[in-house]
Image (tube, one colour):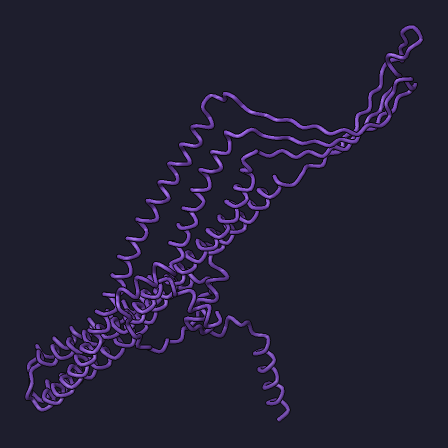
Length: 433
């Protein structure tokens, strides 16, 4: 008894110390979304773009803040010199000062630059949302590919079991002389094909799991939960288009790009205005030996107006370039708006198609199952040929695969419509992810 207790305790202790990787981690689609948002390199790159945009605003703001400079000069001469008893060169001199400078254009283009930097932050934020949505829809597609591969493996296993039973039945009927040997050979051939399909299904599942693990950033050896099928209410196409034009992050980004390009024209125009420089200085000096005319302390201010008359056409070239960028931004916006309309229409028609065919594929599978059962019974009593069995089995396998593909493609189509209308990530956030 003591020995068994010790062994049991040792097993429990070893199980506590065993690495977590011995147990397959199970993920739902929401879990995969959450992990991808934290680990995906593409999303992190876009997050860094947002960080850089925020730093650019700090740099634009720094131009509006006066510059404070402290300087100190110490001079050591070879000797002190006098002229008619007046000190003209001391032995050493020390001078330090504190200087406050501010320079700005009379067009106040510095404030325009600050506004551009602020809008660039908003643009980067919308770009980040667009990258996140695009990446998560790839995760969803990879997730449903894994589910389809798992279903395909189940279908291959079921088909293999069914053909094994058919081969055994053909073998028994051959022994009693009810069928010819060609029936058994045909059954063996179909069985070999089923084994080949199972190997392909296993490899397809392994590949889709590797792709999903790479996208999300998880370790191999995981399992996934099958998402519950949800029938979505399909809004009208004009409603979906209106939603897309108001919610799509990439279109919002281009709206900010249009505003930025407009302000860049104003910023370039400001280069034709003069610059005003304001300075305030406190200065203190010491000498050894000290000159009678030494001014130990002074405070002064300065105003400087700088107007470049000719700079080789640089300002005009910058202004024309800014106007060209503004035209580009307007064209990009209109082109993206048309592209979004096409994406919404394509996603809408795909969803309608998937939803419409789903019911017929379910009916087809039910008919194929009934047909397979009837033909199998008829073959057992010699009322159906081997070709009838093979045809019925082929129809059943095809129906199962088509329905599995349609079920998961329908769920992906629902997400694609949300992505096309710009509400995909918003609904994910509302779900607490």
